[in-house]
Image 1 (cartoon, rainbow, N blue to C red):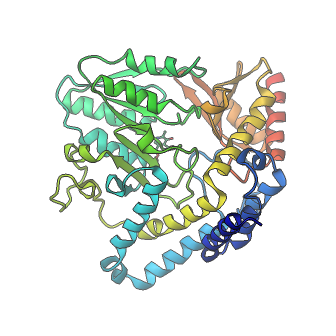
Image 2: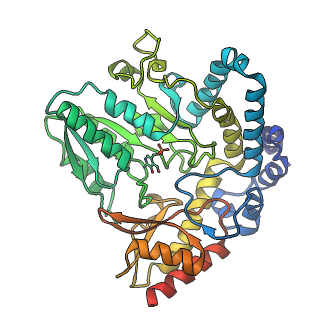
Image 3: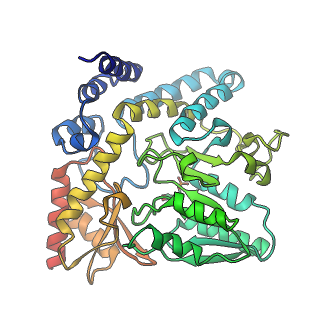
Length: 421
Ligand SMILES: Cc1ncc(COP(=O)(O)O)c(C=O)c1O
């Protein structure tokens, strides 16, 4: 074995040992010579990841977009942290609570590609983005651009600032099958006026899984003096990117989605020189206007969730970000490629590999999405979620790393038979 490879394998195995997943870590280490795309198609290999999950036998779960429940080694870690916090009580809270949280921030910043001084751990994407949307120093008549396909809670928050400060909200509609990046960039560009202050844009649209060209949108917006807020709820630890490279001003994500952190953790990135311009949602004792800590006050919260973040990161690193992304995309393409030519089946997600990963959306001509979701569950024991607004009428389909091709075959068969009926 090459010396460098040997060291890499040892590191991977070593990282996993304290979590009790050394077996699976070894399996990944043994495959480390394979390119992510080659490993993506090795179903027998991924079966080992499936074995790490306790799965309900009642249905096939193709709704992993809401949150990614934990594989058993991470669940065990989480339970250990709960026990430890309950054992230490206030002593923990008054001693190393903040030091530990900061260690997690440093690890998260390394994955996100930003400085730890620009990142905080919040409870979720909603808290992160609403801190920014509500905290901007709005003037009456300022304009904000967003998409019909953005997440409802953010649109509700913009409605609130519109009612409160007289902000004018302008909507674009993102096509499900864009020709190219330029079409998307032009969509946002054409909505900009001299009064535009910010653009809210989803990194991965939650109802279709479409990935938007954030870097190009940020470059265009900055040329017009407009700031960019990115909703990355679904992108973090799903696809690979660096916030520095995206060039946006604010970025938020939920860690209980693709990083498999227990429920109740998110991140907020704010560009260093913009921190001072945001009103905090909740007041904090931090007096330095340039310290991001002043945006981070929530009061007492479940610190055992925060403590599990480094474990979830170790698990993610053990799999490898590139391998995870490649397998998730492979699974999506495995089933979409088998239905895309059926004229009664409508894919609401781009088929171009670079424009989607695990998540996609499918509808059946003449069938309401709610009916499709109900029939999939009742007749085929397949759990999905119906989406029926804007230009998206179908069920969101989200496999996870534990999903098998056998499950997807059942889903494909179900779709074809429902489309015939
Ligand atoms: C695009 C998008 N933004 C924000 C959220 C909100 O995430 P959370 O409930 O974790 O705040 C979601 C949740 O699904 C989402 O899909």
